[in-house]
Image (cartoon, rainbow over all chains, first blue to last red; front, top):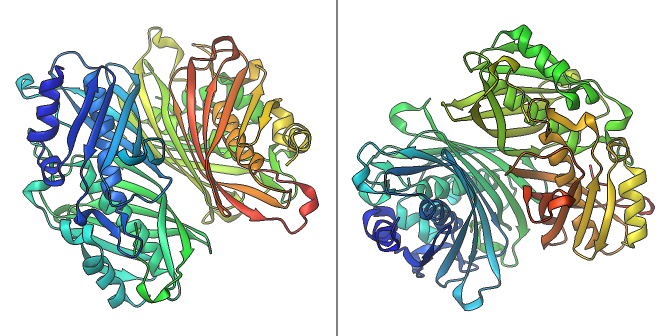
Length: 149
Length: 149
Length: 149
Length: 149
């Protein structure tokens, strides 16, 4: 899928992404980097000012799915998450969060992606890792792109 | 922890829960039921009007963590998710989502919870299942409750 | 697949099952119960005489995969595990181990199974739970059955 | 723990490891590399001559746990697997299998390790990846080492 189309789908066509503010930082075949700027509403533990695990798992799921999308030819397929695992290694700080996802396996039916999440202020400090397994399905109306669910 | 305090923490003290509208349906020792009313912003796949996986994983994480909280004595502990796995069995519809979580193991350091997610309009149709592992930590300022992160 | 054929595949055609002594206790559509009698060689922690986690994960994987097999029509498909998660709730004792697996989702390409593991001496005491995701593939030589790998 | 003691525990003190032939290839603080020579009995799918997933998950569990052990001071602790996830990327061939495990997080109570599994004949071709979460417990009889279960 052309990078510009992918960006449009991720940023503009998916209501939950717009709601939270998800942006595409970089796309190449087999890899994607998504980012979500910090908002006070993302806090999960007010005592420690730590980000809610749900922000992290949402970004992991989205990045993993769209990494698979970058490796698909054409726009006639849609993805659905089969399973997602997130390992939380450190509390997320009140800062932008980045998810970098890489395809580790892709076939005609199932794709698997690895995701690493960190803050841009300290790229090598991993906040969480994710692993997602996605079903690849043929779209009946191919025009509309590979939105994840 | 007293149910009323737990409800207050879940619904009022955690910004991400307030942002998304998470409510406590029921609490008992070892079990909790959380609910999030539907909003258009929760859509992840506009073609199929399916809920974003991130809404599901957020509610699974929160329900699993607070199920563990119901089984802790006192309010001097805090929880952090170690890992979360979500299996997505069916697309989520544009409806309220419920997560029912049960403690499957709890010790002084680690708790494990099972979560089942469904729509209230069809309680027996499982949308997703989750399994969360949580670290139980002593709070330095015990006054403030067991907010999850 | 006919139960008698399934039993033969599980018990006689899979070298690793023969090596460890895996037996079929019960089969019905969508469910299977496997058992492995205890051997001293299964100990993983000699101090606590606890069973090695590898015996538990092997039986979980096998039971999950063959539960999917019971739900497939014909013998022209083969399964490969995509991912397996095992949660270890209690140490396994030096006794026979049973795995009961149930299909939670099955399509033409991917099947998901839940597994519960316990000792026959205390059926309701769960030792571990497993969740496996399996790819369903067409066999080129349909004659040979749906051996798991 | 001294490398020589660790090797002795892995290779000689754990019956399931002796039964399958698990060897220590390399140890350093925070990393371990285990190997199991191939045996015909490890086949899980005789049609494709693929290794049984249970051999892979056993080695992943063992490597992850002992990677954590390398990072513990002294020999007064024991480990128990809390949960293990294995992603199977390619069929395992009838060859020796190697698991390389790295600690990704370790505290006083919980350790997390990443594992990569491959054949020594093609080190960069990943057969499977694993992620294990382990509880770290104080031994009552510290003399006896940190056997995993």
